[in-house]
Each structure stands twice: as C-alpha cells, then as structure tokens.
Image (cartoon, rainbow over all chains, first blue to last red; front, side, top):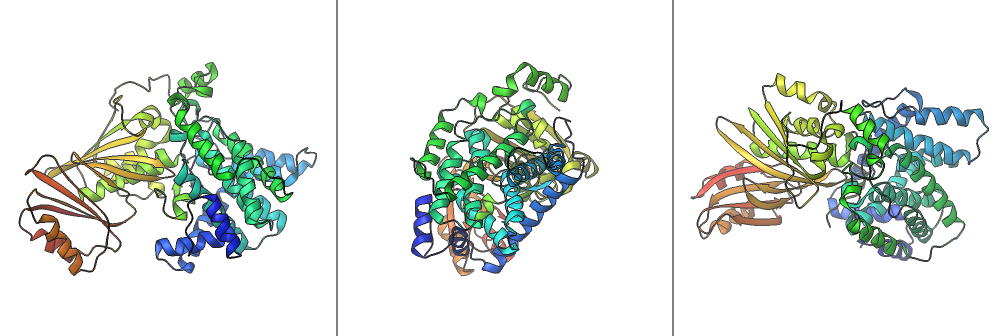
Length: 301
Length: 220
C-alpha cells in the first residue's frame, strides 16, 4: 500500500518495495484517482508534449513577452553553446537554456505546463530535456522523470507551499529545483535516498529566495531564476550521485522553507512592493509597462 | 492533503504567465459560471491582495473573464476574452479592493442577469489550485476537484436526511460535506462533494423535496 506524506516515507516505501520513486508516485496516483495506470500515463504524456513544444518554441522562435521585458535568452544561450567555447558543462547550459525557453514562452502567454507553478515552469522540463538527450533516455524514462519530480512536489506542496504569493520564490523555483534534482538522480540510475539528498541540497540553496517580480510580471527575475534553479538541480543531482549527503534531512529543509516563508514580509511575496520590483529601475520599468498609471488605487476599468 | 494528485503538481496545462494569477483565476471564473448555470449579462470582479496589486500584468482579469465565458485554463481564447465578452454581450466591471483578506490571492465574482445573481469568493492557493470559500455570503470550502451539489434550502429539521437519502438511492458517495446558515431558521446551504458524477435525475428529485429553494450541480 503506497501512501506517503513526507520524503522519508516516500523513500522508505521505495526501498522496502524495491521500487523507483516514480513507481511509488504512480501507485499512489492509481489509488487516489481510481484511474488506470494507462489513463494516468496518457495524461502525463500530454503534459510532456506541452513541455516539449514550449522548449522547442523557446530555443527556435523569437519569443517576446507583451511587456517586452523578456524573450530570446534561451535561443541566445543555444547559439552560445553551438560556438563551443563555454565554461560550464554542456548539459548544464543546455538545461539552463531550455528552462529559460519555457519560462520565456510562459511570459509571452504561450501554452505551458505548470511544474509546480507557471512561474517556475522551466526548471523541470529544462533539466528533463537536457539530461534525456545526454543519457539517450527512453520516452518511458522521460515520463517517469515527471512522476518522480511530481512525488517531491506533492510532498513540498502539502507540507509547505509552492506559490510565490504564499512562500516567496523559494516556494516556486525552490520546489521546482528540488523536484528536478530528485528526478535527475532517478533517470541517471541513482537510488531513492540519493534523490532525497539531491532534494535537500537543491532546496537548501534556494532557501529565503524572495518573490519580487518587477512590475508584478512573471518575467523579471523569474526567467533567470528558472535558469539558475535548473543549474542548481543539475549540480545537486551530480553531488548526490557522488554520494555526497547533506546534514539536514530533506523533510526538515522543506519545513525550514515553510517557516521562512511564513515569516517573510508580504512585500517580498509576489506583491511587487519589495526587492527588485522596488529598485529605481524596477519602478521605471513598471511605469513604462503600465504607462505610468497607478496600479494600486481603487479604480474601475 | 490540499494537493491530492500528481497532476496538481505537474499541471495544469495552461496559458501563461502565472498559475496562481492566470490558471487559478480562470478556474475561479469557470466555477462561478458553472454555479450560475447560464450565460451572465453582467459580471463584477473584485480583486484583493496580490491579485489587486498585480492583476494587470499577469492577465488575471482576462483569465477570470475567460473562465466566466466557460473557457478552460489552456484555451487560447483566454487571450482574447475581453473582446469575446463584448461579443457575447457580457458587461464586465473590474474593481480592486484594499480590504484585508485571509488569502493573498482572493477574487469575488458576481454574475447576474434578469433572473437572478450569484456571488462567489474564490482563493487561488498555488499551482492553479483553487478553493471557493463563499457563495452568496455562505462560508464553505469547495476545491472544484470533485463533482459537487449545492443545495439552498430553508433551515428546518430533516433537510440533510432528505437530501442524503436521495444521494444514497443513486449510490453516490459523499466525500466532503458542509452545511452553513446565516441564522437559525433562515436560509441554509448544503455543499456536498461526491465521488461520482451527479445525474440530472438526482437534481430533479432533490428539487421535489419540500423547503428546497435551489439545487445546483458542479461538474469536476
């Protein structure tokens, strides 16, 4: 009987039953939804297709958001990788490029799959399509990647939060980075407990991250935070695969994230009142995007 | 558990840019429309908290209007929803309020036509997931994840038994149920989430019970 509420329970079920994290998530989904494995698999495949299309759009088309604040970074980084003289690893940069691509498509009101939210939608697909290419992974393993990352997101969402408005950006890109890190470990052949270590390492590096969208838009700093969230997921996964552990267990890191989010002032939780949004340039961009109209008074539109 | 399935985490498939501000808003609009049960002539939207601060840039307003027009989170028609509303004769007013609310992403939607009106308050709790926390002034909690039955009735004894008898007859299992009333003996609301889809015949039968005012079905 699969039923987990914490990372520790998830790992212990996986180890006791000699299963992957994705198996445990699938089994729980069957139980909760009453749907068949085939139906669930098909639904996940639809999400996968949407993710693939968004990544492809971002790295090949000239994406521009309506505000004009973002677009083109994913494509630019692909061109840079093609030139060959990059410093970080190719797989990491590819993941970063694909993460930004998805988020740029999101900012441009394109179709995406929230993972776990739209603002953080780049990290899971970005790392998935980069790692899958590197490992020559089967479609089945790629779909499993989404179930494995979903399992971690499920724990984080139910024990802490996944929305910037409730917990800051650590709740969005932090959760996504932890989800991706666990799934990268699984697709690369690591153990469930290595996945848990990757979750702890990735999330501890995103703790305290505030949600301070310039002009209130899911663009700046979100696109580049998806980039760095993807790179943290990749490095955390590699560290875990090297059998490096973190002193604080994943569940306690998630709890720390929750408590930090609870004590975070509301100006730093997607209200566009603090952080980067409150910088002189942030304010200028806001005025430019909205034509200098007041956005915070009682008004009819 | 607030988030029940893996697709609450991997999903929804949606039009960007924000799952809370766009997908969640569209779902609040769609449930309001669903409860209203027909095409409204007027729609009054009030945004609170983070919604009030950032709705313009996120397209929260157009997503919510899209929902009111019965569009799904991934329907590209959402982008053109303001024009669609005009075309379909829905007069939309958007207000923002500085009133403190329990949740930062709160929206109130009032839909009306010559036959009546419905007012619901919804919160967008993250990742496109929502809860309806009030309907016509009655406090309740509905996730929109399950089929639900909303029964407005006079506050008298035996009403819950009467309604649950009909559910039992149709072999519908109650997953979650809430009752609320404004004051003793006045109007009351039963909100019942079921595990199975609710057939029209069941609605008709409940409508026949004395002292029932209105019965609304919400498809998941």
